[in-house]
Amino acid sequence: MKKFTLANVGIALPMDTGRQEPGVICLANEERFTSTYFSEPLTAYAIGWQDPGDIRATLDAIAPSVEVARRFEFKKATNTEVFLSETDDIRAIGSPFKRVEFKGSSVNEKTYNKGLTIRLDRDEMVPGSEERAVGRLISRLDRNDLRRAGAVIVAASTNTAKTWDTSAGKNPDQDIIADLITGADDRGIQSNTVVYGEVAWQKRNLSYEAQNNAGGNARSGKSPEQVAGLLAVDKVLVSRERYQSSSSAKTKIIGAYVLMYYALQNIDKDDPSNIKQFWTPTESGRYRVYREEHAKYIDISVEHYSNIVITSTLGMRMFTIS
Image (cartoon, rainbow, N blue to C red; front, side, top):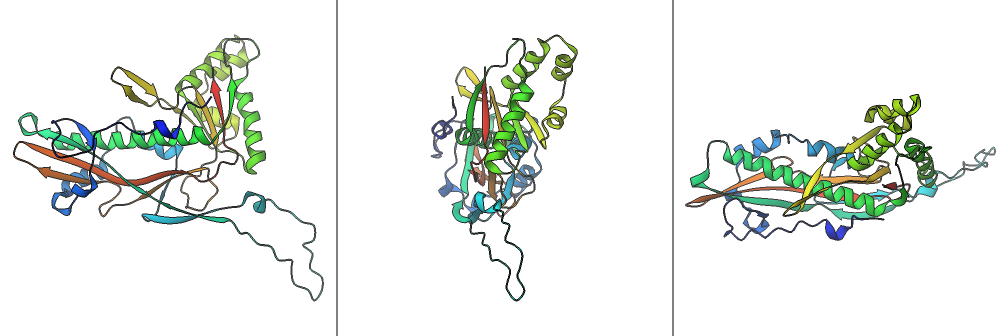
């Protein structure tokens, strides 16, 4: 069952009107972003800032980033063309070689201007308040994109329900190996990325622990890197990130899913990866910070340009674990 949908990715925040209460995060209004309010020192801080939870690293691992212009075109390879084969590639004397074509299809896309604003009351500010506000906004923007990445992968993947519990005979790793083979048959290339939600990773380990034998105990103690070697993939990630889904509850971004797909690092816009995080640099780098002064408060805004796109659904597989 697919619980993520594109419809629930949106963040319910008010639009910045210039009249928000201090401390309230809101959607930044692009019309109010002018060179008058650009802050070079805070932008420099934003470029060098790293989230203690390293959400950006998780996002880049799940959806590798590709730098593009605001409007761009990428080419989808026609899967069948890549794997065509013939036996008539022998040239006869005086004749040319057989001519083949790789047509593909072009897709036009763009990156979206995303941003948030927070208001700081001068009576409550201390040294470092503005820098901490920038960090909070970047972390929130990255968390928003991580939610989008998880949602689009889940929506695009072929789902299978699996039960990994303490019953005898369960073999979670073998389940994944079998599904990786199915995905490779669809795509023609083996998936290289497996992402476990925290719940799915826990159920994998508990399932092996319950077997109470040498093989089960050995597998339950494996690290994600060791499991990646066992599955013959480039990377295994365990997502433990959460977001505030209501005033009193937090929700795991990946949760009880295992996601299996193909995503190359250091990629270009036309490679055969299933998902890409397209981004466009601002005049000052990945993020740009604005500082708008008022008599009793200061508005800090952070903007960036990105668009997370499923560039191919071929071979994308997932488990929902119970």
